[in-house]
Length: 200
Image (cartoon, rainbow, N blue to C red):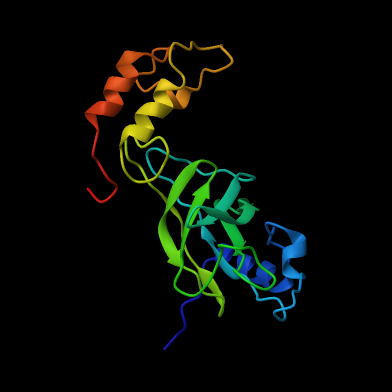
């Protein structure tokens, strides 16, 4: 039986990971720091393609972050490998050599590319490097990318109230009707999606 060969970008990422050339850790010192508790723990490493959909097109040199229970635990950038945008990220451990509140077996890691929340999440595991393709969530009105439309999203639009294209506080992400200003119509569009979640 012939073994199926992985796509070129997967082989390239794996090679770069093995050489330590693709990872951009949250803190370079975090991997070498020791404490009175013992030697440093290794990070968990995730890598793979960053997928596009109708509301998100990935690009190279965009910040990738990994979060555990509200703590920033990993930082890197997307890379262009051939025709594919890819990422690789080290997610720091909790405890020796890590960052308080970060990785431990069973903790859930959430990924963002820029401000775009990605799926799936991963369970923190530093026993090997994990291939994990990232897909953007696409939920209209979910402006904080937490997979639901709620008061937090309305407050984000309200924080830009009465701003116009060209103004310093204007942000097109909150101009949901694309008419060049952020007003009650934009808030009403978010309110119409109230209660929607990524799960349907």
